[in-house]
Structures are given as structure tokens and as C-alpha cells.
Image (cartoon, rainbow, N blue to C red):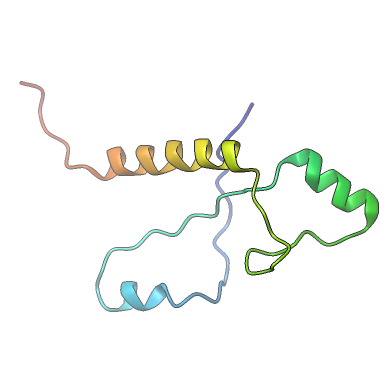
Length: 86
């Protein structure tokens, strides 16, 4: 099972970019939070998937947290300064 998928950059509308423009290093990731089964049900019913800012939105909590924690841990480790082995 593939958990992480690299995608092309996109033009988002977030205020977060202001930090980067001010010289603060930033990284923004998209974390899928709705399982494939639910996505398929929305598609079959021809109902749009509720967006993040919708009152109808709710994530599949456990797999979302698991993937998010794994992603953030991997990113933090990758960003740590590399030190030679003692």
C-alpha cells in the first residue's frame, strides 16, 4: 500500500505563503483525510466531497492521524542537521 504520493505544485490560496516571503522556511503538505471507500460512495451518489472548510467535512481520524504523524516525523528527521556518526 502506498501512503505518500508526491504531486505537482499547485496554486493555493493560503496566507501561509506570507511567512515564506518574510524569509521563514516553510513547507506545506496536503494530507488526504477521506478514505477511498467514502470517496467512492460520494462519487456513486454524485455528491461532491465536502471541503476542508465545510461544516459537512469530517476526516477518517485514525488513518489520517497515522499518516500525518508519519509524514511529519519523516519531514522533521529529514530536516535535522546531519551529524557524522561518533
